[in-house]
Image (spheres, rainbow, N blue to C red):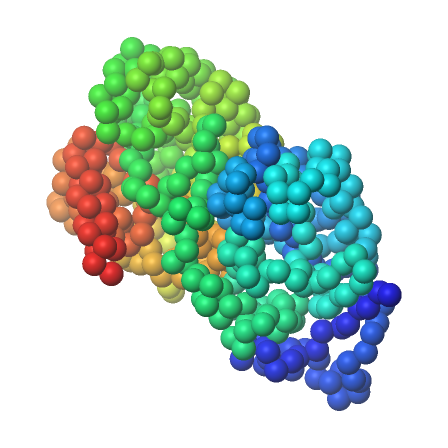
Length: 510
């Protein structure tokens, strides 16, 4: 017997959820009692968990997501990516786990059938209960319905005891409950404080980073646990007109020599062939590629680069595509997809991490009066940056591949840059109101040698701003930055090491 219950507010709803549900269902509460109903709405918001521990786990995820999209499951949000210890049956490989929110016209049992078909087509057989599997797809929530049948239970019956399910589920929510559907998911929790209370009782964020559960970003051929230490990104400008080192490294020989000077301390080399300084003239994708590719190929062939990462700094989708084909590992886009309508779809197809930076306008307009207007710079940067994350996810770029950059020096006055450097926790908390996954993303800052440092320190020459850069980097790291993008790698690496040591010592004391 199939049983579908339309979820109404219950005594288990958290305060915010109860208020939201009461407002949303006021007329229903006064006119109806709880009863069994068939699902009639053409579109239902669902949550689907993913797990894999056999074969190429990440490729399994990518394949499953593609098959879901082709089967009428429109994915709107992605959780973070977790590598977790196996549960129940412990003698098996570690899992990758995540979850997605989606909208579908499929009924609950149709949806279950589609997911089971995907599992079978990807090689999953009966096997051991809780044993190894190439892909595991579970329906956690289906609209505002509680479902009980011989083959399907929603919410999934063991959500509440599994941190490896709860962590990515929480990522799909925001701290502000902004829909009646999410409010009702909270009210289905076994905890009086909803899903947030349940997650806290399981251990919450304190579980992340321990041996049993690591939040990771897939890059190259490994999973990067980026929160363990601050990473240093060394800047290689191939442009004749960059504000700091324009014209110094346009030849392949000089570029390789500069990379060699940075590589002992840098984790990432960021190569840019298009100037994005204020009022810089834009060159074509073809000209940018002519500058970039010979140097990129030479850098990637350096033996010292074997364990290092290379990012390409571009806002052109064609440049990003060609660079990744040649071997670049990340795409760093100062426009977060706003200067090339094909960028987000291209990045989704390239399957590499994507650095999305906040900027208003383009380099020729970003410092205009209109683009410098903020009432609350941290809140507005967070909101505008999150809108770019939403667009990226809808284009197929999962949240677990996105790195955020608040765009220091881009569309900002001196006071705005200072507010951002001291307000990184505020930016994260503002994003968390709408998406915990996005708020957990690695955070990159790039204050290096920027004009605002020269204004503060009376250093008109960019090359004289390295001490000020170190101070800015230090403030950023203490505010939660995970990656720092700098010109002078040697001196900044030392600052990063000291900051990390201090943070480690503080965590031990806590």
